[in-house]
Amino acid sequence: QVQLVESGGGLVQAGGSLRLSCAASGNLFGINAMGWYRQAPGKERDLVAEITIGGSTNYADSVKGRFTISRDNAKNTVYLQMNSLKPEDTAVYYCRAERSRIYGFRQYWGQGTQVTVSS
Image 1 (cartoon, rainbow, N blue to C red):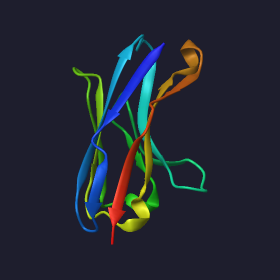
Image 2: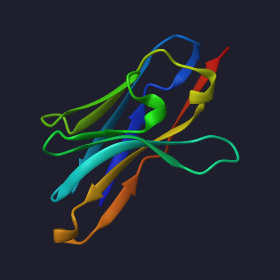
Image 3: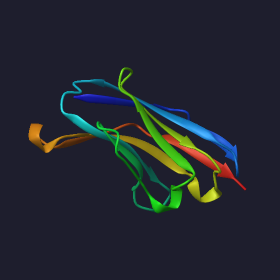
């Protein structure tokens, strides 16, 4: 099992910044990617950004140039630096970890952290 604990959400004005953290623990063998997803009320959960164990990154078009994902392998922690926040970024942000198909594909989710951007 893998446990993911998010932190860093909150209320911020438009144009402001927040940094989310996701600390992973448990059996991390074979975890090859971690990322952030978000879900606004009445909408589906969508990818925000992800990073592989090799450091490759992928971003949703809506956050490119504003958000940066990074990881500290020594701390088993992934970060999401969010700048120039907009009201449409308001959502619950979830951390996700993915175990490689080589070791039996499985995904794990954190409990979510609320991000609210006021206009």
